[in-house]
Image (cartoon, rainbow, N blue to C red; front, side, top):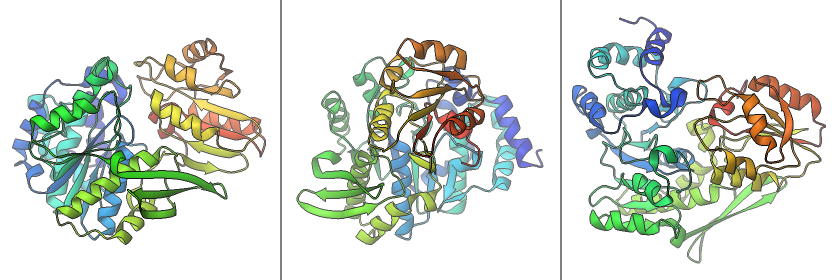
Length: 431
């Protein structure tokens, strides 16, 4: 029996394969482990209502926004997301409060015989833990973010009130498929029979995939970008959002704590989700929506999405790590005012990063680093690959040392950006 949280967590880290650390070797190509774990726990996922969220980019932000709005509406709201940045307990929250360390310890002690019997992955255990916790706390609803893909993701044992698919772009193609259609098919695997599905963005390359899956399952499908238009502007250096439903104004000049330009697509999907929940008799007012969006960071603890870390010099981090995400980040970098640009960048080694490197600004000076996980690409190899795309700089392997180098070199009118990988952002001191 484990008497301390740290001891129980170390057992999980040491004994269960973890995708964030070792990559595809941690994955299982069916849901049998999750089903067995849920059966052993009495199928807690059937005791609460849920909203299931998948997509390549934006699923984390969208999940947090939906949870914050539901919380603002008075619903006891669970939120399951991954990976965590600083502490394991970030993955499982109720009304923004992280799961207690004592519950984690107790859960590991209770489920240990099943762990040793079936040998699940780290992610499969965290999903089962989240379901068990939400059932024990008796949440009104839980927002469940898919870990990877959708069809075979461990979270895909829920039958939700509705599903949301945010965006389809290139990521994990060695696992999900080598075409956008194949990737979309994996994401579409969360669509359930007769359960409404929202797709945040109508993308011509893949919209037919979602229409086909939804039609086969008689699931009503809604493309949020058909019904909502969200645009951003900048006032006094802060991003504000305007939203329209058709010709009707939803809000004007709304300043969110989430400042990324890319949130326009996510907000449209979230507004469509809220519209459908209202049709299902959920009590959510316009003021609840405004308050939930404005307070999403304070109410849910979301970090690492165009997060301001300092001024003079301007210092920002973002967890974007695939081509579409990096493209949006670079677009926002180019909208800033600065003299020189400093980029602290690290990536993982199990992805083709050539497209990302092509997108990064050549005029910047780079500090190539690596996060402290086995999946991290060695910074020495990264500087070599980056050089082929005209990116110049120096190797400073430790993330925080690289940041210190950038801060020493930057003037007060410069900009420092930190990112390239979720795991680089996770290691920033005092994030």
